[in-house]
Amino acid sequence: MPVDAPQKRATVGEFVQLLVWREKDGMLTITPQDEERFSIRLNRAIEVLRRASSAEPVNDQVRLLLRMLAEWLRNRLDIESAYITVRDGTLCLLLVRSEVLYSEEFENAVAELDIAIASDVDLDLIRLNVIALPRASDEAIASFLDPEFSIKYVHGDSAGPDSVGQQRP
Image (tube, rainbow, N blue to C red):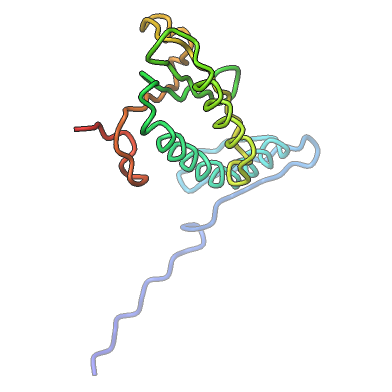
């Protein structure tokens, strides 16, 4: 029976990172394996760790919101274009109508969507404002969009989460 060669064990230095906390000024000094040392205040480190641990639920809710909006937009022939952007520090759904004239039916549908999203317990971490514009020029629409973050919905048959944004044949 062949004897396996002994496995090399990792040294402590290969997997231990160094963390030094100075109580006097509340600073943490962290030295990762790559030796790129950095310092951060304890309270800030706690805040960063809390945010990181809560990022996954927010990401899940954003994916759910995007699917929900794609479903709502799928058969809306009265909407020329739709965007998700950021305005005033919160997500914003910008709807551009196909027509210029006011439509009470359209406004009611938008209000129902807004209420449904705001009251959905599965979207409790998401804040979304909805803005509806009449048909407008690209320049006018661009003035409502954040140049750093804007997603345009493309009308399509949205049968599932992977089909969001597929164009109609």
